[in-house]
Image (cartoon, rainbow, N blue to C red; front, side):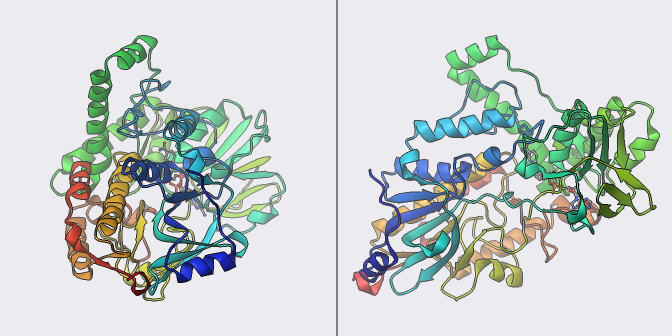
Length: 519
Ligand code: NAP
């Protein structure tokens, strides 16, 4: 198929009046989510779609994040598409570059590149309730129309600078981990890192191999378990290549591990508190083993909130790094940033040459999920709706009054086992709806409000069992929580249940209508 890119505004409005959109489906984002959705559409023989991507290549998070030490912290045998398992990972927890290469290979193998338009940002999408099409505004005012939108923009895409006085006055090199600058040479420099989330845990040990002095500013400590990581030996790769059952078997084992640690321990806390408690014990042991006889550091590094209140991670080197005499863990709050260093509240100035912001991303702040305006039949932006009425979506994918619109990462959609599993569930959900609309000759498909409401109530009942409501999460400063005090990041369900529900939810949970102009 040859993709005809955006029409001129006039052409579009003519076609628009006929009710025929430019594309049946516009997928926004060419990361794992967008590619997973496109593969699903092609498998259903639907090829009237385009993938819009604001960057110049595929891979999303794995293209953007290139900080030293970047790697997955879910085993690669789990962190990949179920239909595209790889025996070739260099390590059990592959480096970020392997993941980026994997996305490029998947794009080529499944013939997705001809459907992609790079360097194209979406700023707004508005549903036309008469013609049942989404009018999508691109950069510089171009307009494109689509019957359906799959929003595949990911969650951790907008790096967040810390709200610290004087940040702009710093005269040395300054960079955010999400936008790494390989031209900056760290060798022999005094470096300051602000933040101790999952990114810093991977980066700090690598930086320590190069720099002359490292200050790490910790506001809230993080749970870090030991990482069962090693190179994948050549004999195992060969066995995995030759015996597919072995590859699937290994995936079952890594899935189970990830499900227990990253899903059941958080979401079924009331039913199985021992999992989180064992993880906490392991986290403390991991710290003490790496940093023997350092009660002074243990007191600072052990989280006071429950395991899972915020994203935990894995490392066999992070704590050990603080044992080096040129690495300082600074827990005195930051007062301000000055031209040549960071001043802490005790008045001390810590001089640095390079400032690294490991300060994370905007997540549930309005304007991030999604990163463009989405105006539904109620005339309201979906971000504003969520901000006013609480984050909500049916099975993590659709929202009443936003017909023909599907999110891969929406409220209560992330499956902690692996982001790939979220993508597989929600792309299936979206494609089932799109297919059914086609079958019923409908142009508008919308989740029934009563079905959505019932599900929303179910979610809140389930939330009561989670760690978020039961294990001292108030002090965690976790991006899992939103302004309402809800924790809408993770889907309160096992991965198996989510997969089963996306395959079997009743298609009658949606209403289907046909635009009059098409009648
Ligand atoms: P993050 O978890 O949001 O951590 C940001 C850090 O910056 C926190 O320690 C935070 O402290 C600190 N911070 C923010 N503003 C600050 C301020 N004004 N003053 C002092 N400290 C401040 O971000 P991240 O580490 O980039 O990780 C984001 C997510 O990326 C992870 O949770 C994970 O989901 C994902 N990730 C995944 C992998 C992987 O392998 N799959 C690897 C890395 C990251 P507070 O905690 O006190 O707010």
